Length: 399
Image 1 (tube, rainbow, N blue to C red):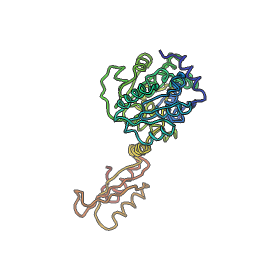
Image 2: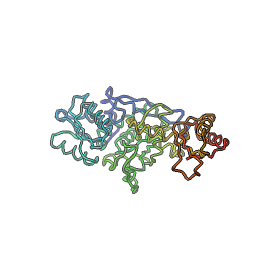
Image 3: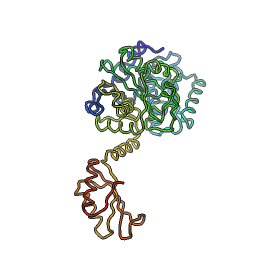
Image 4: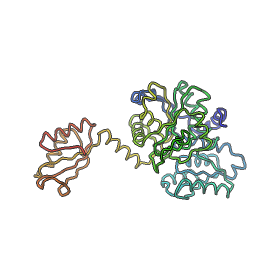
């Protein structure tokens, strides 16, 4: 059984090998959600994820014989990089099995840490089965991403650091995939501060731990922007710890996670992946639950695909009204486009795109329909632009 002493021993092993990352208050986020919010910046680890802690601790627990043979792991992301990086540091052979769909940038980054990358299978389950087969065939030690007490003990060290930095936290809100992080953190936190509340967060598309612990039957999706916690089956060891020590598990939607990623980028100037924003997403979705409390959040990872980040930023600008698409109908005469753009400019908006439509419209043949994508200051500014266009004799509507 995982104990506080296991986690304290892990903390000693990890000294100088992983960062003791900052845990500081976000005054702006606190004002927005109505709770005192403290952020643990695990996205500042060398591989940009807390996964380093568990991987490094597990590797330091290997026997001499196991060290000589090496290790194997299955991961499409942060665990792969954590194992590869610390195996390289410790002079160990590391074989990482990744599904064939793994983005090339993650494959190359893992290889860059000296690991032997094997691409196998179209699903995580197929890749995991192959990793176990390699372990048996080559005498390698399998390093599980979450269902391992040595790994969970390493993850739990960040819980020690959070309570050392902010001893009177009321609540910890932790992203949950397979359960390694929340198991370690809950074990440490409940032993040190028995009255502390531990809340786990999963996305509504991957509610495996919620279903396992609560006996619910939420359907499972196929993808999520929080891919770091997109686990289909929770660990057996971690599931037992979650049932015993975690006070509640909540679900958040994709839009909640998107908003949280964008807020952390804009307000805290820090980049997190979807899983790293899950804790803040829970505070945004259930503000009444955390009102007035001192809440600790773990920004557990910062490895996000640039194209996904660009899409999140753009979608966030649309939701806030800072990016708007409008349709303007006017008589098709020379100079009408110049009048429209001049009116928009006078209203203080910037035109990003123009689509001048004549054929594909139900308007009369003498009329023209023009679609504009505008950069604005917000929803009130969009209304102001539409008002000025209408005052100039044109029909203007938000699309």
